[in-house]
Length: 329
Image (cartoon, rainbow, N blue to C red):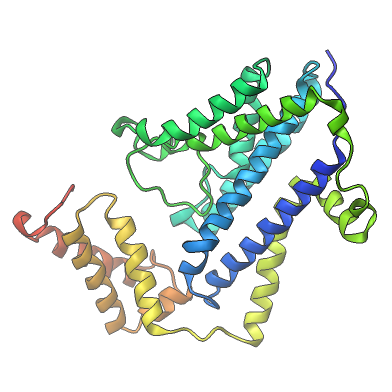
């Protein structure tokens, strides 16, 4: 059976807008990575919801695309070719981030979710559009109530149902995010039944240079996704060679404490983690290694920082149990 070849031009424009928004968010993240802005800028408040809205828009468009591509049959050869490109790109992202940021590498980000949804979505193609939207809403709403301790661990974190904090620079698990794809499929099914809506609401805009640019990157979204971050990072790195960031020691300390305790408390309680993180920071500062470590000049796995970490760990474990309240270790 052949796939349905309908292409809605305005979807390319919408996808292009989402890509530009994603690049803006990643630019903010890169500035934080290079210490030009506070790390919490892109992890809290409006920026946090900006990131979620970008992910939602991508996944809604994925759902619409699934319906438009497969509603009149699935061309398996073309499907597997496209799926292999997305899955391969997701694997590249995982490998690259594992070496670049091993403590928060991307093991199930937006591309992983798209690869999963492209397969799982096939199971729901025949549902009517109201059922798809309702199912998507239930999928999203039920996620907080389905968490299980048995699903803890990195090997099951892709489900989104683990009862533990997950550290990753891009985390888009099956629950609740596949529900957004289902809603997108419902929107696609609604449009598919009303071919008069296939007209381009951006008809005039599409003929402008900006409209043509957005449509172009929307048609080549995977390439844009893969290359935009290396370009942004390279540009900011070159800028940093000329205008290095002025780092506030108090902010470095706050960043270290926040990240250290978040990681520590996956295994130990608050009291022990507060002691451990304070111990590591103080001992690193005593030998002038704290700032180089936070600047990325040295790595935590090098001999001296690692020895300090191990010594503080032993001291932490020596804290009497009655003093380590809320201890899960």
